[in-house]
Length: 492
Ligand SMILES: O=P(O)(O)OC[C@H]1O[C@H](O[C@H]2O[C@H](CO)[C@@H](O)[C@H](O)[C@H]2O)[C@H](O)[C@@H](O)[C@@H]1O
Ligand SMILES: O=c1ccn([C@@H]2O[C@H](COP(=O)(O)OP(=O)(O)O)[C@@H](O)[C@H]2O)c(=O)[nH]1
Image (cartoon, rainbow, N blue to C red):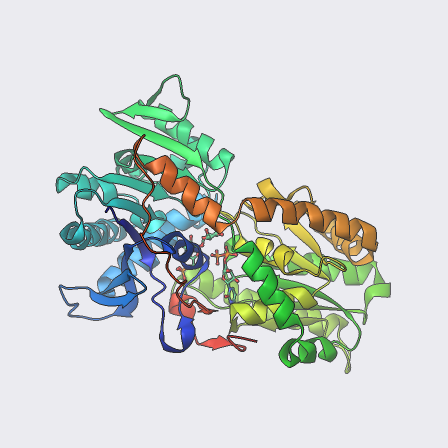
């Protein structure tokens, strides 16, 4: 029986006590492996000078989690360097922040080759391979060089900008061009997919009768949009339960009857946190009736803490938070609670449910699972309002129910905040219902199934295990280099 082999930088290895260090990607990939027999290969998150030439394997529910350590130089050049100082900013339309160095590109290529070497040892001829995200773009090329003719798919969790912008990436042909070695390349939105289609055309790719199938350098590559979802029903259940616990009730009580606005984002310049805080400031200034009647809780776990742009953002935000509280706060009211802790997803579910408004206002975001989780966590009888950036991937699905904003327009965002805080119950219910209809239809299972089905050659059955598997426990979610332990109960 064919297996599914997943390859990604991060692997959410289930840990004793149910805690795992991972991000949005890891939560999503875990669902793809549920009910399938397979292997999940990636980086352990650890740095060692003498990495073993064999991965450390953990077996759980017929899934093998196989991880390797990286050397310091690999971590610096591949992860901090090329992946997070070149690809991340450029693919998030921030060419101005990209810091290209040839040594980092060499490190990126070296780690991809190392991954290919390890994965090559476990591949069986009928395995289907699913590679995730910008860290691993050239992997298929190196697997093909080793003679693997398997079906190999790639999913990009972050945005794909237009080709004119990709042109700013030195040696883009070597990296983005290598995506043509996959059989299927998936994106979060149709606009990401179309941007890549245009890029392939600039590289001599020819689309035939189906505009999403390209012939390029003697191979056929299919491109598609597969918006990543959440475990909608399970998350709604979790929030219902969490909302009734003392932990979340205590949080709500601490607000002393004030309305709650919530923001949950990794500390990342792509998330637009400064712009959002400026909008909150503008609300307090221009609508003084809201002073002392609202609290903004911004939960911002640190991430990629060795990358200079992230260090700078950290400094800026701490300063900004102090400034807002200094200007508007009072001895009995802290307008902004700015927290750098990582919370368990159960705790977050409860916080979302306790909130009246969520601000999800990235400048660019592949999807943004927080937007979806917030909507799913609401009480349908008395739901909160989602204020959502037009530049989040989630906007393509949630614009019918969210209050849409342009994060570059402070006054517009402040007005949306005010409207959200004042919104009558009927309108809140209607908007929530519209979002839930989409989230229930396009959930995480549908995402994984539709990608795998599109990856399989015609007339071959999807990769499934004979016996349905219990879902591995994945409760706490932290962030690699910035992960300092998960706060809040795992099961509330
Ligand atoms: O692994 P890190 O460097 O600590 O970063 C965490 C993850 O961030 C990014 O997440 C993306 O995937 C989400 C799920 O599809 C999506 O909603 C979000 O918009 C993306 O930014 C990154 O792409 C992952 O590889 C990282 O693991
Ligand atoms: O303290 C936190 C902050 C975030 N998350 C989770 O991390 C994921 C973030 O995914 P998203 O797509 O919003 O952004 P990313 O960080 O992957 O760019 C979501 O599932 C959040 O619930 C978490 O478990 N604890």
